[in-house]
Length: 584
Image (cartoon, rainbow, N blue to C red; front, side, top):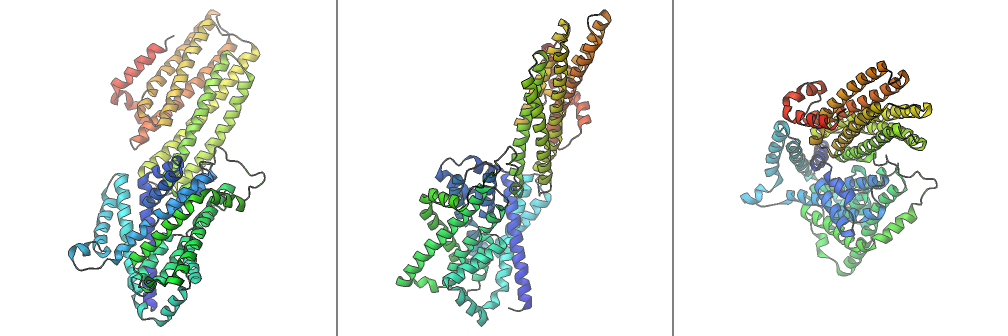
């Protein structure tokens, strides 16, 4: 190889790795986090876990990505170590799909039907379709499909470029000597491990080997140990990912390494002992991209069959290897916000949405409890409301920070809208929690001063309190379930609460003039009504956010101005219903 061939090789390798990365990103976006949610939830049996690991990895084309997710799941407390072992084994087989796609480059023949299946024939078509879909399509799904097609085309062009740049190696005596050195199983395994550890992808390193095989100078005896080493090298990614994790996440990464190393040791020892006695003729055959795909797949299938019955022993081995640290911090509510998930933005976003839903549930309970204290004050319950408020502040800080990190990733339009939605909503949920503390302060004042509202005022407070409870319940339900039909019920009720607030204040002034109430009670009543009104406003903000971002905009004032016109019948239907329900 001359200097310019080396430059061509570097260019081809760059295209290959970039195409693989783009194809993987497109597949992850297309899955929309669904595959990752299935992984985290449906692992009840060993064989189901194995199947899920296989399917997810075959679709996203990366066992490294799957195992990194598993490290994150265990670190976040979503999964246990034992659940991951079968998934890892399924992922090991799932990752071989890439090598089969790349083996198409080895197809030979002159007939039209054979030639059309060669990469140089169909990748230009895929590239054209992909670029058109990426540039013209409006839906996220079509854009993601375009990215996948374009990524695959770039990957295959890179493969062809690498193969072309290495064609001169056929005549190189020094390269022939180097290949003989790699026929030594230990040297071959070591070189495959190092190469894969450097580029952190067994699919990519196997692809490079397949490109080299197209030169026709690599015997099976050289390719075999390199492939075995490539399977060990791919474990470097989860190992690096687990460095800052807890003990269990480190055990997952080590389990990946043990599964690969034990498999390589068993398969290589048995195979080379048999080869020493039987002298397999195929070892001197020239390796093709197809042969390499077969060897890569067979190794992972055989090692899985051997190791699957011993999952419990592998689990014990990893536990013995990584001891539990003293005083290790246990998983908390925020553990699922793991930065490892940022490489799969859809799943990271879903995880954050769950946290915001928990935050909304705590806020709802705090407000309902604070309202109950107006009639029946309980210091223990009051203390819990203050504790909840401190917790909500932490929720807001953690969730907002994580959402900002998600927003820095390559997001689909839907995911980008959801990030904006959650960032808006979090502030409103936190402010409702603040108002529950304010209502608590008013309830404490009533209790300490032993003041009593008039019968009319008590009825009025009860009426508006019930309306506030309902609007908060609707807002939380709409947020948690992403239910836009429920969200549409909130604005009419907010209008009723505004009118109730105005009427109660007016009635209080009348009672004050007639001597039926006091100025001191008026201040307390005013505080309660102000906080009720603000809670309703924040619930309205949540509803508007859900509705407007669903329509690709966030024009709060425009929505509130147009809601009676655009949905007059529906709005006034709900308005009349609430008007009858909450009458003074």
